[in-house]
Figure (cartoon, helix red, strand yellow):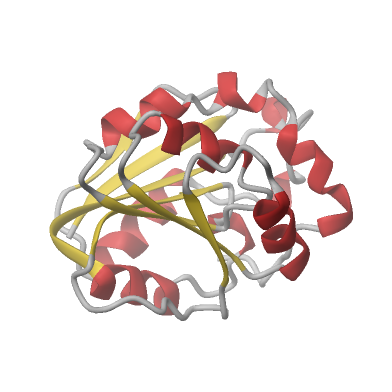
Length: 190
Protein backbone atom coordinates (compact mmCIF):
# COMPACT_ATOMS: atom_id res chain seq x y z
CA UNK A 1 0.00 0.00 0.00
CA UNK A 2 1.00 3.59 -0.44
CA UNK A 3 2.14 5.84 2.37
CA UNK A 4 -0.48 8.09 3.97
CA UNK A 5 -1.75 10.77 1.64
CA UNK A 6 -4.30 13.37 2.55
CA UNK A 7 -6.67 15.23 0.27
CA UNK A 8 -5.81 18.93 0.25
CA UNK A 9 -8.85 20.70 1.80
CA UNK A 10 -8.07 23.80 -0.28
CA UNK A 11 -9.33 21.76 -3.26
CA UNK A 12 -12.61 20.83 -1.56
CA UNK A 13 -14.78 22.67 -4.11
CA UNK A 14 -13.80 19.94 -6.61
CA UNK A 15 -15.73 17.52 -4.42
CA UNK A 16 -18.97 19.39 -5.19
CA UNK A 17 -18.74 18.89 -8.96
CA UNK A 18 -22.11 17.50 -10.18
CA UNK A 19 -20.33 15.17 -12.62
CA UNK A 20 -19.23 13.13 -9.57
CA UNK A 21 -22.86 12.02 -9.17
CA UNK A 22 -22.65 10.49 -12.65
CA UNK A 23 -19.32 8.81 -11.94
CA UNK A 24 -20.41 7.51 -8.51
CA UNK A 25 -24.23 7.25 -8.67
CA UNK A 26 -25.87 7.57 -5.23
CA UNK A 27 -28.58 5.12 -6.33
CA UNK A 28 -25.86 2.53 -7.00
CA UNK A 29 -24.46 2.99 -3.49
CA UNK A 30 -27.96 2.58 -2.01
CA UNK A 31 -28.62 -0.58 -4.03
CA UNK A 32 -25.27 -2.25 -3.30
CA UNK A 33 -25.60 -1.58 0.43
CA UNK A 34 -29.27 -2.63 0.45
CA UNK A 35 -30.12 0.57 2.34
CA UNK A 36 -33.56 1.22 3.80
CA UNK A 37 -35.22 3.98 5.80
CA UNK A 38 -34.79 2.21 9.14
CA UNK A 39 -31.05 1.73 8.84
CA UNK A 40 -28.03 3.36 10.45
CA UNK A 41 -25.25 4.13 7.97
CA UNK A 42 -21.81 5.68 7.86
CA UNK A 43 -19.78 7.47 5.19
CA UNK A 44 -16.07 7.49 6.07
CA UNK A 45 -14.16 10.33 4.45
CA UNK A 46 -17.30 12.21 3.47
CA UNK A 47 -15.43 15.37 2.52
CA UNK A 48 -17.92 18.18 1.97
CA UNK A 49 -20.81 15.72 2.24
CA UNK A 50 -21.81 16.22 -1.39
CA UNK A 51 -22.30 12.54 -2.26
CA UNK A 52 -23.38 11.72 1.29
CA UNK A 53 -26.35 14.10 1.05
CA UNK A 54 -27.43 12.56 -2.25
CA UNK A 55 -27.26 9.04 -0.82
CA UNK A 56 -29.14 10.13 2.31
CA UNK A 57 -31.88 11.63 0.13
CA UNK A 58 -32.48 8.13 -1.29
CA UNK A 59 -33.26 6.76 2.20
CA UNK A 60 -35.33 9.41 4.02
CA UNK A 61 -35.76 8.48 7.67
CA UNK A 62 -32.46 6.58 7.87
CA UNK A 63 -29.65 7.76 10.13
CA UNK A 64 -26.60 8.70 8.06
CA UNK A 65 -23.35 9.64 9.81
CA UNK A 66 -20.70 11.48 7.78
CA UNK A 67 -17.14 11.43 9.09
CA UNK A 68 -14.00 13.18 7.95
CA UNK A 69 -10.59 13.76 9.54
CA UNK A 70 -10.39 17.32 8.20
CA UNK A 71 -12.10 19.98 10.38
CA UNK A 72 -12.76 22.24 7.35
CA UNK A 73 -14.73 19.46 5.67
CA UNK A 74 -16.85 18.81 8.76
CA UNK A 75 -17.52 22.53 9.16
CA UNK A 76 -18.65 22.74 5.55
CA UNK A 77 -21.02 19.78 6.06
CA UNK A 78 -22.43 21.42 9.18
CA UNK A 79 -23.04 24.71 7.33
CA UNK A 80 -24.91 23.05 4.45
CA UNK A 81 -28.54 24.11 4.27
CA UNK A 82 -29.50 20.92 2.45
CA UNK A 83 -28.10 18.27 4.77
CA UNK A 84 -30.77 15.60 4.15
CA UNK A 85 -30.47 14.66 7.81
CA UNK A 86 -26.82 13.63 7.74
CA UNK A 87 -24.88 13.85 11.00
CA UNK A 88 -21.38 15.26 10.35
CA UNK A 89 -18.62 14.39 12.79
CA UNK A 90 -14.86 14.93 13.00
CA UNK A 91 -13.09 11.59 12.91
CA UNK A 92 -9.84 10.66 14.59
CA UNK A 93 -7.77 8.54 12.18
CA UNK A 94 -8.57 4.81 12.48
CA UNK A 95 -11.07 5.34 15.33
CA UNK A 96 -14.84 4.98 14.95
CA UNK A 97 -16.83 6.24 17.93
CA UNK A 98 -19.69 3.78 17.48
CA UNK A 99 -20.72 0.77 19.55
CA UNK A 100 -19.86 -2.73 18.42
CA UNK A 101 -22.30 -4.05 15.75
CA UNK A 102 -24.25 -0.77 15.67
CA UNK A 103 -24.15 0.05 11.93
CA UNK A 104 -25.99 -1.57 9.05
CA UNK A 105 -23.62 -0.49 6.28
CA UNK A 106 -20.60 1.70 5.63
CA UNK A 107 -19.19 3.27 2.49
CA UNK A 108 -15.99 5.09 1.69
CA UNK A 109 -15.48 6.99 -1.56
CA UNK A 110 -11.98 7.71 -2.93
CA UNK A 111 -10.34 7.39 0.49
CA UNK A 112 -8.66 3.99 0.39
CA UNK A 113 -5.73 5.23 -1.72
CA UNK A 114 -4.97 7.80 1.01
CA UNK A 115 -4.51 5.16 3.71
CA UNK A 116 -0.94 4.10 4.37
CA UNK A 117 -1.94 1.06 6.42
CA UNK A 118 -5.66 0.36 5.98
CA UNK A 119 -5.79 -2.54 8.46
CA UNK A 120 -6.50 -0.56 11.69
CA UNK A 121 -9.42 1.27 10.06
CA UNK A 122 -10.78 -1.90 8.45
CA UNK A 123 -10.70 -3.66 11.83
CA UNK A 124 -12.66 -0.75 13.32
CA UNK A 125 -15.16 -0.94 10.46
CA UNK A 126 -15.60 -4.65 11.04
CA UNK A 127 -16.10 -4.04 14.77
CA UNK A 128 -18.92 -1.53 14.30
CA UNK A 129 -20.75 -3.35 11.49
CA UNK A 130 -23.62 -5.60 12.50
CA UNK A 131 -23.43 -9.29 11.50
CA UNK A 132 -23.96 -9.47 7.71
CA UNK A 133 -23.33 -5.70 7.53
CA UNK A 134 -21.89 -4.42 4.27
CA UNK A 135 -18.91 -2.25 3.39
CA UNK A 136 -18.53 -0.55 0.01
CA UNK A 137 -15.17 0.86 -1.02
CA UNK A 138 -15.03 2.97 -4.18
CA UNK A 139 -11.71 4.30 -5.39
CA UNK A 140 -9.89 5.47 -8.50
CA UNK A 141 -8.96 2.86 -11.11
CA UNK A 142 -5.21 2.41 -11.35
CA UNK A 143 -4.81 2.94 -15.09
CA UNK A 144 -2.88 5.69 -16.79
CA UNK A 145 -5.77 6.54 -19.14
CA UNK A 146 -7.98 7.29 -16.09
CA UNK A 147 -5.58 9.83 -14.61
CA UNK A 148 -7.07 12.94 -16.21
CA UNK A 149 -9.21 13.05 -13.07
CA UNK A 150 -8.21 12.27 -9.51
CA UNK A 151 -4.83 11.49 -7.97
CA UNK A 152 -1.69 10.53 -9.88
CA UNK A 153 -1.21 6.90 -10.85
CA UNK A 154 1.39 6.26 -8.13
CA UNK A 155 -1.12 7.20 -5.40
CA UNK A 156 -3.78 4.76 -6.59
CA UNK A 157 -4.29 1.17 -5.47
CA UNK A 158 -5.20 -1.98 -7.35
CA UNK A 159 -8.63 -3.48 -6.81
CA UNK A 160 -6.95 -6.84 -6.16
CA UNK A 161 -5.00 -5.34 -3.25
CA UNK A 162 -8.19 -3.94 -1.70
CA UNK A 163 -9.87 -7.36 -1.98
CA UNK A 164 -6.87 -9.10 -0.42
CA UNK A 165 -6.64 -6.78 2.61
CA UNK A 166 -10.41 -7.03 3.23
CA UNK A 167 -10.14 -10.82 3.29
CA UNK A 168 -7.10 -10.61 5.58
CA UNK A 169 -9.06 -8.66 8.22
CA UNK A 170 -11.92 -11.16 8.17
CA UNK A 171 -14.57 -9.92 5.75
CA UNK A 172 -16.33 -12.89 4.19
CA UNK A 173 -17.96 -12.27 0.83
CA UNK A 174 -15.64 -9.80 -0.92
CA UNK A 175 -16.23 -9.00 -4.58
CA UNK A 176 -15.57 -6.36 -7.18
CA UNK A 177 -18.72 -4.52 -8.25
CA UNK A 178 -19.38 -2.36 -11.28
CA UNK A 179 -21.41 0.74 -12.01
CA UNK A 180 -18.82 3.47 -11.50
CA UNK A 181 -16.90 5.65 -13.98
CA UNK A 182 -13.13 6.12 -13.44
CA UNK A 183 -13.54 4.06 -10.26
CA UNK A 184 -13.69 0.48 -9.07
CA UNK A 185 -15.98 -0.78 -6.35
CA UNK A 186 -15.45 -3.52 -3.78
CA UNK A 187 -18.35 -4.82 -1.72
CA UNK A 188 -17.64 -6.83 1.43
CA UNK A 189 -19.80 -8.46 4.11
CA UNK A 190 -18.89 -8.99 7.71
